[in-house]
Length: 377
Image 1 (cartoon, rainbow, N blue to C red):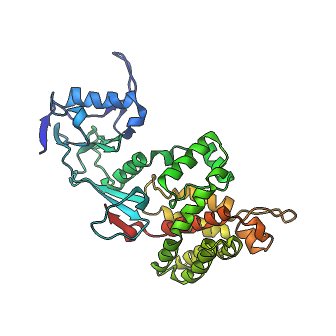
Image 2 (image 1 turned 90 degrees about the vertical axis):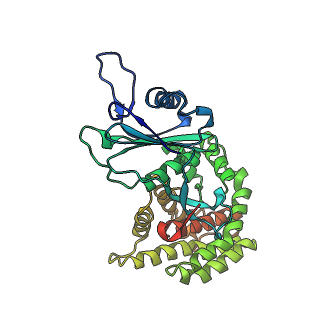
């Protein structure tokens, strides 16, 4: 059951850097911190328990989560291990009510509902756990002297925090590592298993050759092939593409990579064109414009820690799927080399078609409005 603590004055935030008497110091009034920071993270939690909460009110070893709702009058309402937390996700797979949900079911975390209404003029501090990892989200800006009420909904922000903690490794790559990954014609596709995604991240960090993972990538693509067709069938916009996808996917699963590529690489542009036409756009649909409009649509309604990595996926589409080629020495499997007929069958290997299968699933999920495809878990 929640309990209350009364402070002499409203809570302001956390000290961002050490300072001596008389020196200026920075105060972090809002933010998100995780246990991966080590000692600075522990220091914040110890400061909370030592200076804000009464002795014995929270035993650190037994805390899975806690919520502090801080009022402008200094009153704190504290919940420890009693929140009914619900995640609204975009699902990769069909699921019935009551079925268990696995990490592989999650295409994106849309928002998190903690079951407590937070007034916009109150501060919030939420500690939560995902396995061994812990995250701390806080916002004490409404308690500042300006009394600036919170102007954003809590749910999507907590969804971003949850996503950032639960799938930390997917957001850890540097710009250089991301570019290396795309240069290898690879992406952190949502259809890959969490274990394989972790291996790809490690390979990108170490710049290890990705060839040894090709069989696993191909196996994942074959596993999701039936669901790609279902995704298209379930969308009024993309349903007309389902028949062609079915043919291309069958070629892929049967081991005919060249025939599969000949259908599925053009299908990516077909999906983009159907989407572009649905936006009532008046400009001529050049490929760059098709991709840009899809990116903007994919970002709408999603937070910055979207698991579909829309901004990165935009670069992948441009640099890999729609890669240009040297007309004198054409090489590589792409929409253009396939469309211009300059690739021989023996140049299409299983992983090159696996990539486009994973791309189509990723693209269809990106273009599915989150509220329509979301489920609670």
